[in-house]
Length: 125
Image (cartoon, rainbow, N blue to C red; front, side, top):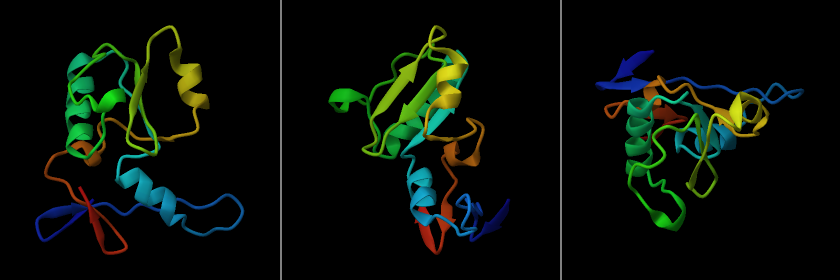
């Protein structure tokens, strides 16, 4: 990771399967915290930290609720509208692995409050 003007700059490239081209719509959705999945593994502190960051970036639970819930979740999923859902231990890792959203590492710099992700000159917080 490098820095520019005091902010972290993350270079993200996702190649389409057979075309070898960067899919910018996928990158933009990921950096806006949309269409992603995050494995938190029943870690309440990490789950709350991630939820607070999601709320700051326009995400919410159904009904536009922006309060930490389901801290003992095993995974969080954010759809294209910014709604958060979760899974428990019973649903497990198999569902998570098969889910179509892009997996984000919960320790990724996208969840640090001081980080700005820049893709093609556009900054995403």
